[in-house]
Amino acid sequence: MSERIFGLALLALAAAGIFIGWDLKAPISYEPVGPRAFPLLVFALLGLCGIALIFSRRAATPWAPPAVLLRVGALFGIVLLYALLFDKLGFILATLLMCLPLARLFGASWKQASIGGAVMGVSLFILFDRVLDVALPAGYWLKPLLG
Image 1 (cartoon, rainbow, N blue to C red):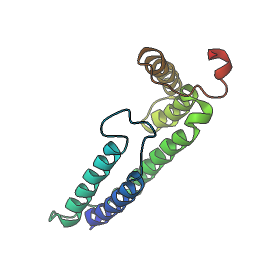
Image 2: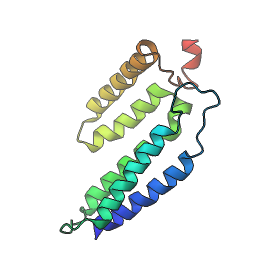
Image 3: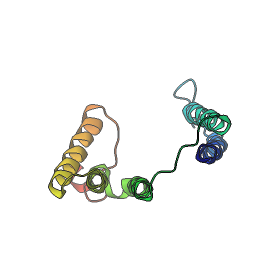
Image 4: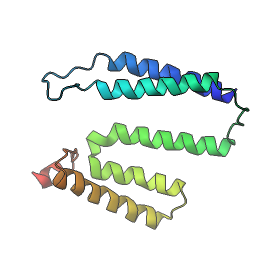
């Protein structure tokens, strides 16, 4: 039964994503397929997977224990907060603040989580912003330093 419930949730998410993504249009045509091809393809595949889960004839999978569901919910909340704070705090600080609780959820010490988050934030910023030339938000606190 849990597969069917999850399949229905995936199907609803796919329908909402296709509905929202259908109107994506670029003001300037910079690529042949435009910006809506990728989201529509992803949501269509998600919908097919949801339909497959709804009509599958497998033995029922037991629900995860409440502790696992709580950790998954915490992971979802952390990533949602990361997305909301990404522009305001900038890539480096937002990544550091995301990596700290994620690393702690996976068993890292505070020292390991802090060092890992700082290294990941700075090194990925340098890689994407400087090497790959992908514009990342510096955040309000770092803009004066970067110019």
